[in-house]
Image (spheres, each protein chain N blue to C red):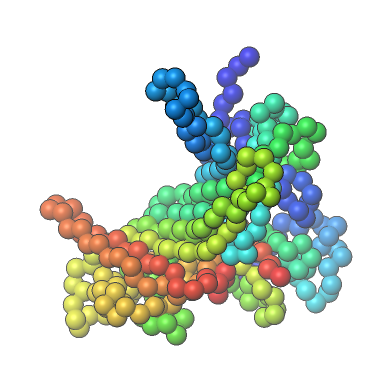
Amino acid sequence: MATLKGQNFRILTYDTTASKFKCVGMATSCTINLNTNTEDANHKGIVGLAAVPTVTSKSWQVSVESLDVSDAAAILTAMKNQTKFTLLWDETSTSNNQTSEEAAFARTGSAYLNDATFQFDNRTNSTKSLQFTGVAQLAKVTTTPAFEAITESTVFTKGQYVRLFLGSDNTATPAKVIASASSLSLHVSISLESATTKDTDGDWEVQEPTGLSYDISSNALVRSGDTITSSVQGQALSDLMDIYESSAPVKFQIANVSGDNNRTKGAVIVSGSVIVSSLSISAQSRSNATYDTTLNGVGDYTVGS
Amino acid sequence: MSKAKVDAPETEAAQVQEQQPAWLQELLDKGTVILTADDREDFGQLIDQIPAEVRYGAGAVAKNHETGIYSLRLDVFK
């Protein structure tokens, strides 16, 4: 029996429209964590010092990394709507690693997509990282799952073609990109709380969403010559400092870009309002001075513009 | 611009109403569509054809580095 390679172990999500499971496209890695919470049941009647753990609850999480960021709008909408996913993991084979092998370790269950990060770095293939948390029990796969093959081709999004547009107030549509930016990430998180009660069957934790938050991180070079009289084509460090000092939210958009200097706004992926929660400047000798900004979302984001 | 097209089977395209492009009809019918174009700037003019009342979102534009073709996925939200 050969060792199973990572590409033959895949995560699938159930497509309610097609009534079939589909692989997470262009996935590069996945992780499954099955956790057991225990309580020490040792007492005076037990001889010795050894703990006597007993199972109090069980939970599971699935993480997937992928090079496909074309479904950003769908992912962001699913999180906003607290959509529950049906997941399946299984051994897969054939040329596209998508055909079910009905492995004995295959399992299925419902989960919330509770954490997603989209990374758009300069001259790098963009990525998404998804984390699902099971809301109830896992089930063994007893019949052949209905699979639908997806098209996985060599389509990539280089990070320089997705940029952050940041306004200077909370009214006008942001028109300026972060000047000389090198990286951008969007992170959305749903907080889950245990809703397990005495009514709950079995040991599995029941999870319910209780809140949503998001943040945006950006790294950019500090531009020389950004003086009090200059006009920089884009939001520079000085603008970010003004926004930080104002303590007020400003409008943002993350959008596809094209044109000169990749500054022409195309289809908007997500928009909303943010405050600057941190600004960190790094100036090391014989290196480019850079600054990192973290922006925290204020209220709901809007998918698209 | 005229080179922009959609990955839709011809049989479905034939059923499309006259006044709407095939890709828009597919977006409205299926809730999702993948547009393709020779230039990333072409998508703007296509998106402008979506009626204002349609709530949709766009993903990140991707490039097929074997063919040079760009693609953009749109999803309708109800």
